Length: 94
Image (cartoon, rainbow, N blue to C red; front, top):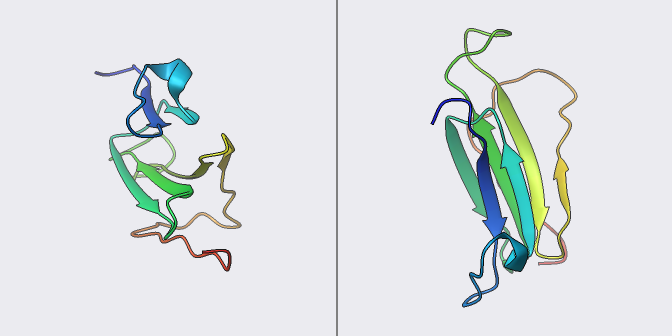
């Protein structure tokens, strides 16, 4: 639906009791497409959002977000404006 936010929520199976039961919750206003990649242990998630086009670029906008089961959510700041085609999550803790 145009102009409506999209959501990514992390739940602990089998507790899907609505937004209040979510371990982590992130909303996106600019997301035509979303790719998600879990780490090996299932404790953290990278979310790559993209739009087909935007006011800033012919190629659209992208956002890379980090989410964890402890409730942490953050935007990953990129040092330059580049197009991301795929992401993966690697941690020495896995």
